[in-house]
Each structure stands twice: as structure tokens, then as C-alpha cells.
Image (cartoon, rainbow, N blue to C red; front, side, top):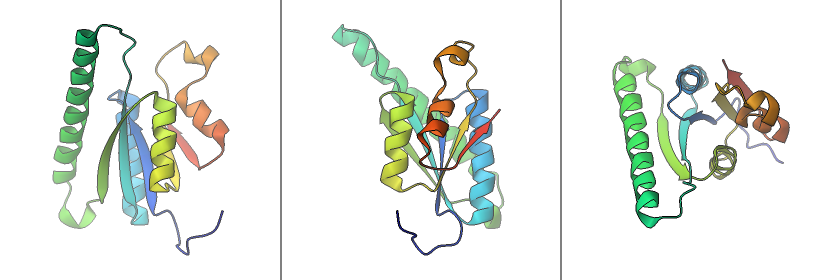
Length: 147
């Protein structure tokens, strides 16, 4: 790896899925990006449906698009409430796949300097491992897990 010649992060990526912890993670990442004068890249990973019927797959894709549009609308409204001189530069990205791979691929493509993600709210992840834990174990970026 080589240094890009900048002080501090240029891109901070936050994963969003609409859960309370992911929204807190996005808010935390926005504060970091504002203070560091970084780009805030928000990514929603639309899960791939495990359905075989074409009609069900299309319905699943429509639901994913609706969730992405709603998240982007919420972000835009929140940003508009912030005074102009305190606004953060941001982008919204939607990818399809599993959450871990989608975040990794987006972070690599954007050359993210840091990743912020909400802690899993699912009890089963204590045994199987959460996306946050997998990102930390990957050791490719500083990862902040927001409760």
C-alpha cells in the first residue's frame, strides 16, 4: 500500500440497512466526515432473494429498491436540516449481494479510509459472527462498530 499524500481520511464509508444501529452508525460517520472534511459514502446492500419464482424475485427486487429510495430520502432530509456550513459531502450507493461482500467491494472501489457499521441486532450473530466482526477480522480498514 502507498500513502496518497493526505492528512486524515478522504472517504468514510458507513453501511446502512435501516436498523436503528445502522442509522446511529451513519450519524456517527457523518460527524467524523464533517470534522475530517471527508466524503461520507453511505452504502445499502440489497439482499439477494432466496426465491426461485421469477415473480417473487421481481417483488423482492422492488422491495429492495423501495428501501434504498426511502433510506436516501431520509438522509437527504436529515442533511437539509443541517446549516449549510456544517453540511457533509455525501454519496449514497446501492449494491446487491450479501452485506459483507457489498460493503467490502464498495469500500475497495471508493478507496475508503475507514468503515463505520452498526452492531448487529440479531441474537444468532453471537454464534455465527456478524458483518461487523467479519469486517474487523478482514483488517483492511479501521472499522468502528456503533452500538
